[in-house]
Image 1 (cartoon, helix red, strand yellow):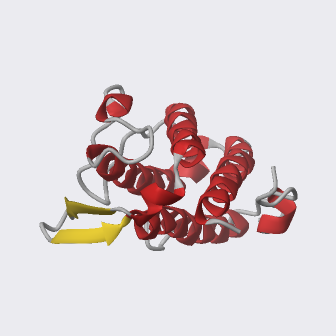
Image 2 (image 1 turned 45 degrees about the vertical axis):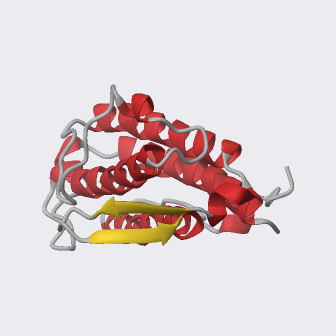
Length: 180
């Protein structure tokens, strides 16, 4: 399996699992979405905002380095990520709109990504001011790892709220695998 086909599969997983979790969260009253979780982030809303932060900041770093078909213009109507604790929206419906826009960018990015792109190095500054140089493949892998990590925390909170979020296994969610 090539890196690109793997990333395309992960983009499809990201899209499908986000839609699955959006449906779960839409079944909750607002009071549960903003309720203190006593976990890494203070609320379900905060988890969604943080996952968006990670996606947008990494995609913007890739766009700033002219990777794939992303351009900084793709982000002109999106919030500018500044801090891991950014709150873009408190209203879940607004989060859903933003989440779908970002998922579309992730899918576009992975669809247009080439194996040669994956071998490039990009440089950027972290939110803490550290200068970093990483291979595009590693940054892209981190994009998906970051989402998965925090969705795992989110599903723990949903479970505590009595929500059955369903199966999250990659071979089930993207049964076609990387062979589309």
